[in-house]
Image (cartoon, rainbow, N blue to C red; front, side):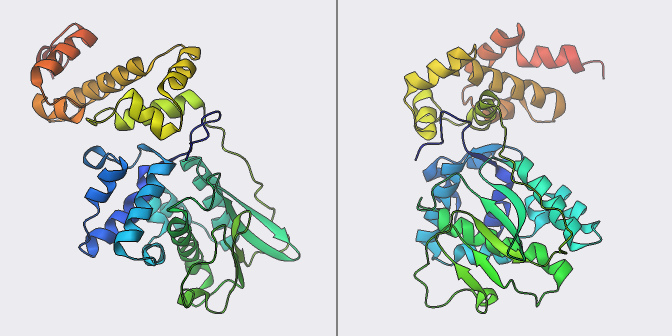
Length: 325
């Protein structure tokens, strides 16, 4: 599946995996090898990193194949706004009304990634909290992630509407699952599948203003740069691998980068340099540990690269800048 290369690549923040990883750990399920198989940076992953949407879906599909088709529902039941973003969770805690919470949720969620857009609208007297993904709904891994999202949206509503509240209707982009029954929370809900966008019916006042659909405006080079920063420490990271993830040829990727005045090598080197300097100045990690964290298993190669970047060895660079502290 291509990441819409002519536009900005479809990405999300690694923090969206927190609830998935937490659920696997709680149930003693080995998820790391499955994540490595699809190319996720298991050893170096942190919340603010940018991840390609297709790798996330590939991981979801492997989890589903390994641990069962209901994994999206099970994880979604245990996913709350604070799991996606502590800041979002705190903002929602300060909301006095459900309408205010919906507005905060839509505004904040649309800043996290460009693999989903959220909005609210009123149709035939019913208010809907809506979402849409640019990824085709028949993509492997899409269905478990959408079920996770639906259950997560219910958790968004419960603090304001009560734990016994249920939506009267739900729309899903995915096709109907091959399950005998739907999740208990939706047994008495009208659920429509294979819809152009997903949504849950919510109770909002008629005078509530809609939150309009605004397509994400992420800069192409900025997104590519963030992806390079995520994967630059990984031993398999190369021009060929990266181009394959983006759904293009290496030559096409280089051509588009050249139009923006840079190259894959330059982006990769800058990412490693900036991370090495940040770790040297802002952590207690040893130089050997820093070398590994930026993608070097050999100290002589790291020292050589660092001296090329800064004119100094890592130890001398740190001594000059931090020696007097």
